[in-house]
Amino acid sequence: MGLIFGKKKAVSRVTEQDKAILQLKQQRDRLKQYQKRIELALSKDKEIAKKLLSNGQRERAKLLLKKKRYQEQLLVKTDGQLENLEKLTHDIEFAQVELQVVEGLKKGNEALKKVNDALNIEDIEKILDETREGIDKQNEINELLSGQLTEEDEDAVEEELTNILKEQLPNVPIDEPTGDGEIEEEETVPVKEKGKGKEKGREAVLA
Image (cartoon, rainbow, N blue to C red; front, side, top):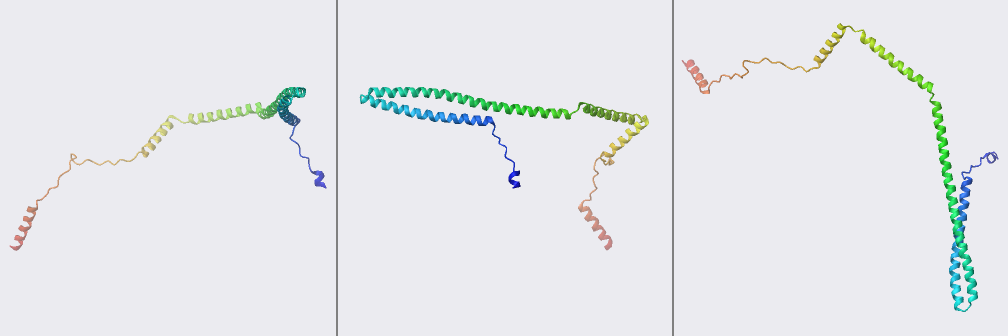
C-alpha cells in the first residue's frame, strides 16, 4: 500500500502549445478528407448531369449542377480554412522556438552572472599585486647576489669557465717529425752477395 500511495506521478512534458498544435493538425487532416469527398462528389455529379440531359431530364440536371456549384464554393472555402490552419500552426511552432531561445539566453545570462560573481575584482587585484611583489623580490635577490661579487671573483669565474672549456676539448696527439719528413730507405744486400759470403765462410772452415 505504501508503494502505491508513495509513487510519484510522472510529469508530462506535453505543453499547452503542443496540444494546440496537435488539435490544429487534426482539424487540417479532417478538412483535407472533406475536400477529397467533395472532389469525388463533383466528378460524379457532372457525369450524372450529362446522363440526365441525354435522357431529356433538363430540370433535374440543372438542379444537380446547382448542387455541384454550391459544393465547389465549399471547396474554395475549405482551401482558405486550410491556409489559415497551416499559418496558425507554423506561428505557434515558431513561437515555441523563440521561447526556447529566450530560455537559453536566460540560462546563459544566469551562468555568466555566477561566473562574474565568482570573479571578485578585489581578489584579482590582490593576486596580481602579490605576483608583482614576488617578481620584484626575486629581482632584488638577483641584484644582491650579482652585486656581492668583486672584480677578482669575476676573473676567477672567467678562469674556471675557460678551464672547463679546455677540459671538454678532445686531446690531439702530437708526434715529433723525423728528419725532413722523408722515409729512410733500408739498405738491402743483394742475394748473390749474401751467397758469396756464405761460401767464403765455408772455405775458411775447411782450411
